[in-house]
Amino acid sequence: MIFVSNHRKVNIRKLETSDFDALILYFQNLSESTKKRFGPHAFDKQTLIDLYAAPTDFIGFIAIETNTGIIVAYIIIKAGYLQHDSFRLQSYGLTPDHETDCTFAPSVADLWQSSGLGSAMFGYIIQYLKASGIKRIILWGGVQSNNEKAINFYKKHGFRTLGQFEYHGMNEDMIMDLFNLNNTSHKDAKF
Image (cartoon, rainbow, N blue to C red; front, top):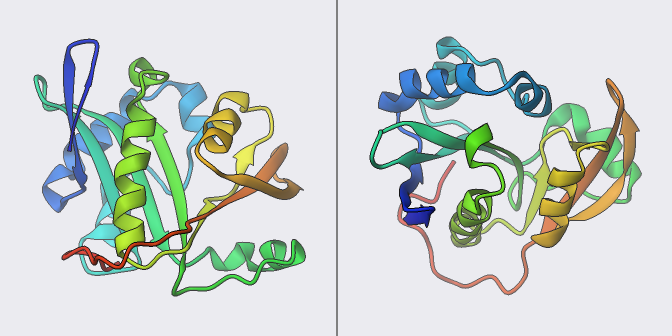
């Protein structure tokens, strides 16, 4: 998928193992503020190998600026839910389902934030998840309560707040229900 913003073109696609070095550079170039808000995993090559080199419950998506070849956004999705979040999710009356839930953590390079790229990537990923049979998206570790920009983004795209919890400050658990699933299947739709 191609996205254009301010005459800059971006290609959105699944992460490949050949992207690992460029993704590490992406992590290194994030501001400290952005790094503090995005932390689903360590930002090193071994972690990427562990997550993506063999078929697992994880899938990554990236946005690459076509003129430079630089990664400008990254999203990780885990099939199911984080086991250590299970009790908290159940306390909201939610019954986590490994088959139809997924856990989602997005990031966008500082210079691309508020450009519409996050919305474009999210739309692309929603179609992929629907085709994969996913019915519900859970935010990975919630969102920091003071991150109004992210909370507004999630609400704009249909997420709702389940509740709050304390972990290095207040956080909000949010989910999105995917309704009106189409019956098409994505040829690569497996985690």
